[in-house]
Length: 337
Ligand code: UDP
Image (cartoon, rainbow, N blue to C red; front, top):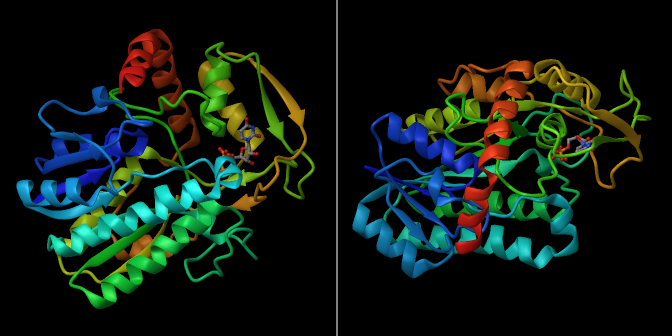
């Protein structure tokens, strides 16, 4: 009953591995350490350094560890990069998953949980966005994930494999116990930038667009704490284990905060008044993205624990402070990977 976590040394994947290990699950990780850190894994969890699309590697791991379920996080996640290099995204996201699924089908794995994204919706006609809303991705990143969803649907129809595709909204925060968090250097995500500013690593934060037709003029996002997201994966696994059929679910709280509100929350918890500069809109940004969460709440046994922006900001800040002091260690690890 082993669970394979691809990308298990990365931001969300490492939270997942800790949660699974804590729950007494047998876990094994494949990660190429391109953005992950082996130090993020709990003691005793086997790590295979390599690509989730390396079928020989995956087949060996599946057989050796008796894998029954795969939770697939490995992939590329930067929207702007995907616009500059779409083929890299179709390779790292779509093609890698195709190879992983091929190995999974051959190896008799019949449960698959996939990290999808709200980016599959593009600009929604209305919010909150339900899963049946039209999918019109604005970036190769979103398209690469949507293509994978389509592939999963077809594979599940043809083989003895059931899946849950979780469409993540804005994942943020860090492990409340401080073990893991977002350590990517040069990250572009709002909460990460804000806590970097709050810890003095940046002189200021730019607000990309204050002229949107929203209450305060800035964009609105549905932030979900990474630990709640991980618990949704555990609930999805339980759902599949108890015979649930394949399904696609939005993963958010169903509540939006503006960029300015988010920055204010970080200022409040940090008790530091870092500089905020109003800047031009960022190309490709969606104005308002909020999940309709009815389906996930009625399908999974999932009760969020950290549905509070200040809590998310507090955990992100605590992690950032720790990282700031330990940056040398993590940096060396990345270089030697
Ligand atoms: N944002 C911002 N300044 C930053 C980073 C992000 O104003 O330094 C805004 C961005 O324009 C968007 C929102 O914050 O409206 C969320 O962006 P993020 O990159 O965190 O996630 P996305 O929703 O684009 O996936």
